[in-house]
Amino acid sequence: MLDKIHHLFFDTKREIFPDFLRGLAVLFMIQIHIIENLLIQDPTYYIFEKWSYFLGGIPAAPIFMLLMGYYQAKSKSSLVNEIKRGINLFLLGLILNILLNFSLIYKYLNNQIDVDIYSYILGVDILFLAGLSFIAIAFIKRLILKDYQILIIVLIVHLLNYFFLEINIESIYLKYFLSFFIRVSDWSYFPLISWISFPLFGVYLSRTDLLEKILNKKFSNLFWLLYLIIFFASLDYGIKNSYDLNVYYSMRLEFFIYSLFIIFGWIKILKVIYDKFNDGLITGYLAWIGRNVTIVYFLQWVIIGNVTTYLYKSVSLNSCLIIFGIVLFSVSICTYLYNLSRS
Image (cartoon, rainbow, N blue to C red; front, side, top):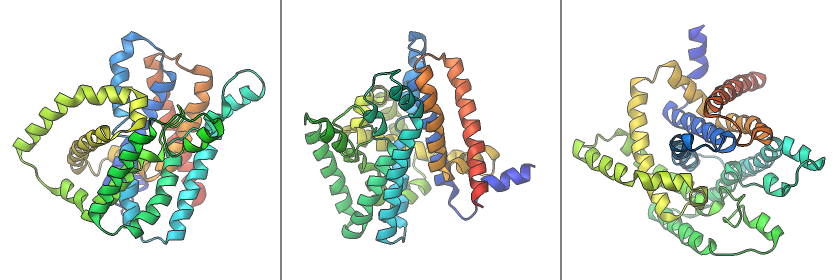
């Protein structure tokens, strides 16, 4: 039995460590979706909640997007295929928004609730960002040949972000459209500007082999001492900005740089853990989750989104932990059956 599970989790045709990183990123996404939407407002939970937002922030979406850019840069797919992939991700994001808000839409259509339903259907979640970024990078990686030019584009993106954050859009229809590209609304969670900076930096890492150098280099004890001093000195900044979702989703340059600083230490720590337990079932399970990241992300949001309609911010911490276990188990089973149906 264990041999069958081991065979299921480990895919020798792929690099397992990046899948391991994605798997943890998705788990952190699941927990923050539950805490953000279901946890009751109680001062007793304040410290836990802040740490939940921190873990569901930098080690989650930024990791996912950075790795997406990294591997897209390495991909030999044609421009047309990459554009198709981006369009499919965008459309999948639209389908997901409809399904995760299905119970809310039902209540809206039956006049049981009064909300701006289009802000939910068109809410700019990470699949929209992934789709638009994939299309943009399909062109950028072919047109921009110098490594340093990628970093210049990242800086330009953030300069544009500072400018656009001051724009006030009156037209609601224009706001729906622009929310995919800039943060002009509360439902613009992952706008292209400036979140594309993470996959762009992934492209830079791929071209320079910097990620491999970081993972394989043995840094001195003095280096890690300085890193830890800076980490703890800036921890309050990181937690506050992760907890303030407007700041997090705006992703300004200073927080982007801070995120890269945290990601550096995060992947180095996880690489040490992975190297020690790379054949373990837990490691394999996380890698399997990461290998199926899109379907896992899709399914968890469908469950959590519809539960939120009825239990929004009314659940205790213990119940949230139970819901996390139920969601993870349900998504794992459904993902396995989905893969089985395709084989």
